[in-house]
Figure 1 (cartoon, rainbow, N blue to C red):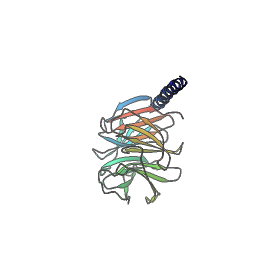
Figure 2: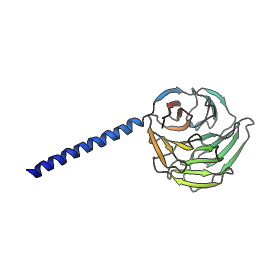
Figure 3: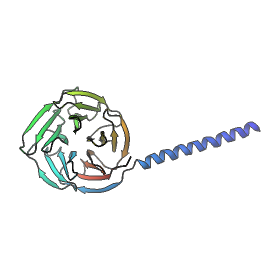
Figure 4: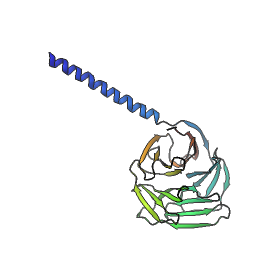
Length: 250
């Protein structure tokens, strides 16, 4: 009889622990949900890559359909189309007040583009990758130390840090998503935000690509991300829309 009572107590405790664990997991899932503030249709076909100016009033994106660069309002309206036609444009970053950095996937080049003069310089990034359709997918400039982060999309997913002369400082293998489709360096927190279109997640990481926190989103083919003090902007390649989420307070 005593053994039977012990078994009953153990069974009850086991059930309690299971429910307690499920409750905690559900709490984490709920806390990771981002609040969608707004979404806007944009006339940019297949936008890929996103950048934002320091005041949070203007966005920049590239189209991997037209291979052009666009200046957008924060509601997704085209303000300017720049006089440059790229080669499989997949990423964009603000570099200086007048210059952008562009990622060209197939040629594995970073383009330094001057918006005021339409002049540009191309820089080949020498790293091991033989897949033309799984190359440089994102670029972001670190204004704190003048280095540049780029993403290799998949097979392998890589975070590569470049010097200002475009030589490689270090390479980190990423392992938290199936692919990596956009990147943004946030100077305020000194962290990276990386979006995955296959996993449908926004991922906050440190500067060596280690995951800090992941947020699920209901956006198909998210291929560009930009972050301000209180908002996260995402562009969808498939439906040509701009999504604005409330940035989580942590």
